[in-house]
Every structure is written in C-alpha cells, then in structure tokens.
Image 1: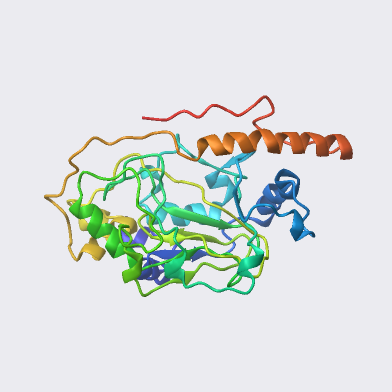
Image 2: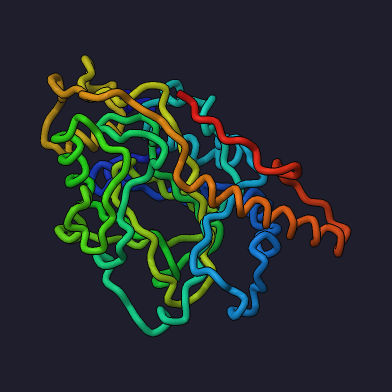
Length: 328
C-alpha cells in the first residue's frame, strides 16, 4: 500500500505500529454495538454483578450467540485493520469474517487483591492462533485484535503486551521454517519462543469502552491479574488473509505494515531465500469442547431469564451448539 493511500491511520499511528507493534483506535466500535453485546452478559454468566461471592471463576472465555460482520461492527477500526494488512483485497472475508459476543471475562480472585505480580511471571505469554501451524509468514492470524467492552484501567485485568518480544518470535520462526502447531507457555518462559524473561518492555492495554487495539500477529501477550476486581470484558476477533504474508515483494511499497514490522525485527529489507519446509495445516481449536459445554449452560440461563422477564433473546444455538468446520 502506497503511503498516499492511507486514510484511516495517521503518520504517527503508522510509526507507532512499526516501532511498538500495536496501535490504538479510539472509539473503534460504535457505542450501540458495545451495548448490544453486553446486554445479557451477567445472565449468561449466571453471576450477580453486585455479589463477588457468586463469581466462581476468575476467567471465562464465553461462546458467541450473536455476530455481526466485522466491517459493520467496528467500521472505524476495520479501516485501520485493512491499512495495516495492505488493503481490504488481501483479507479473506469468507472465513471468520464477523465479530461475536464471545466475551473474554476477567473477574479476578480475592488472593490477587493484595498481591502484585511482575508481568514476566504471569505464566501465559503466547501469540494467538490455536487452529493452524504457525510460520513466519502465516496469514491465518492477520492481526491480534482486542476490543474493549468496558473501561479498563491499570491493575484491573488489562491485556499485557511485550513489544520487544516480537523480535524473539520473529527470529524463532525464521530459524524454524518447519513451523510449530503450539507454543510452550512455561511460567519462566525459558522454553517459549517469546523468551519473555529476556524482555524489558511491558505495556498494559488499558482504555475506554469501544477502543480497539490492533497488535501485530507475532506480538507476545498475556492476560493479567485483576487486582482491583473490576469486571473486565474484551473480545479477540480474528482476521484472516487470503494468502500468506509476502516477505519478498518486488515493489517495496507493496509491503504491508505487518510485513514491514517482521522485516524490521529481523534487520532485513526482504527474505528472498526463506521458505517453509512443511505443509500448512489447520485444525479444530483445542478450546472448542469447553465452549460447546458453555453454550448449553448459557442457552438454558437465557431461556430461564426470558421466561421470568418476558424479554426475548437471540442465539444461534437455540437447538444446540452449531457444528465447527475447519476450513482448509
């Protein structure tokens, strides 16, 4: 994408992404869309928002019941996403093309109210994508997208990112063209490709409801501890490319910002001789079974709430979990 074609990302935002690997899109989601997806969240959880004793789990990855095409759900952020990826024509709108109410909830635990922890010791540092083999040029996870559904402040469960960890991930994937289907997440980080114990930069992704934070797909990140126990709600919708990243383009102006960040991290202008050495694979996410069980529980709660209040609800799962299909 030629620099003159940028309409959504400012020069400062582009520079920030190339330097730090992430960029914030303030109010990237219209308020009404946030409100719609938050409408029945406590009913679905089965918790009382005013009684912490009912909060049985610290973190919950909720399934989706409703979905809206990404470009319609967050039009402002969608424009920025397209520009980071080199143009909308590079995005596969037939696969994971929607945002859903699959909220990721962090309620904290009493033990964390008085105990702080260094981000290096969080123990769940990773990069996203549990449904495909990762390579340096993988296009299945075009960006790591974080949508904030409520105001999130420091020490209230924001996502942590480690900008200098991108270099570690890029180098590991460059040196391992055979790829990897999963990543070691040992607490000390010693065996992880993120090499988090070597990192010095850690950023809490705080913000307002409706903010969207767009991170490089190879950005190491981790859920944090919700010390303040202010309920935190985010989503993490995927965006998939039609083709793998191209790290050897004939015209340097055609590199996307995502591709440029990889090349910059490796200290090169192109990778003409790098190629994967195994077959690209996609598979069922390891979290699918757990979400199917939650679907059944949430639908029952929504039905009971509807009977008690007379209020209708929407769910694609009225007749049971919708089958998951791996697209190859």
